[in-house]
Length: 192
Ligand SMILES: Nc1nc2c(ncn2[C@@H]2O[C@H](COP(=O)(O)OP(=O)(O)OP(=O)(O)O)[C@@H](O)[C@H]2O)c(=O)[nH]1
Image (cartoon, rainbow, N blue to C red; front, side, top):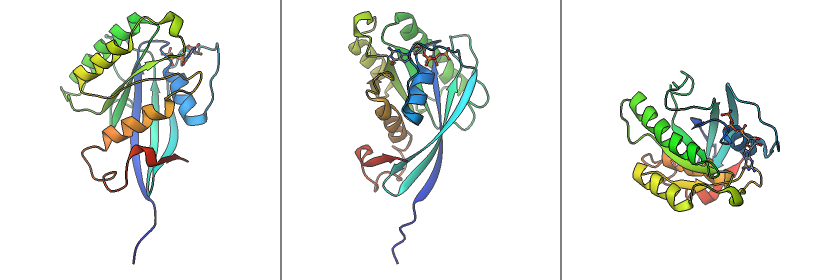
């Protein structure tokens, strides 16, 4: 008999980056499709939930939206224990945030005991602000290549590539397993 029950898998993702790079906006746009224009409340830490379906596999995902970091910050226990993958965010209109994400990546890898294979994605946020751009796409791509991770530019304001950020990270998380191998490509995924 062929079973058609969905396979439920829990995954935990943390969103890291310097202050005000759009971590909360990216997370809430993905989870609820909203964008609070002009509002900026520094985050302490929040957890969001979203189920993402790749055919028969349902990923019940916890997304930890962390406080803005610099190279001296420590990750909270919740943002470091049991995390399957990290969204590493800078904003394309802030060279400072781009430099900080490199340092935050080093801090993260040191904290995890030099685990260069921890699943990550590098994200250049706010790509609707092209007139204020301070970091080129090539610079972002080069940094991601040096880490060996995917790179995406997105905008939480207009929704560009927001889903792709989380789908690509899930794909990274699963790339050495066989969950998605027989379930198909990221293109076949649905948000519940
Ligand atoms: N134009 C534009 N503005 C954005 C975008 N994403 C976020 N913002 C704005 O940038 C500011 C900071 O966004 P947040 O999402 O609060 O940034 P954060 O990284 O969570 O901030 P911290 O919690 O302090 O680290 C807010 O005023 C947002 O409205 C975007 O894609 N485009």
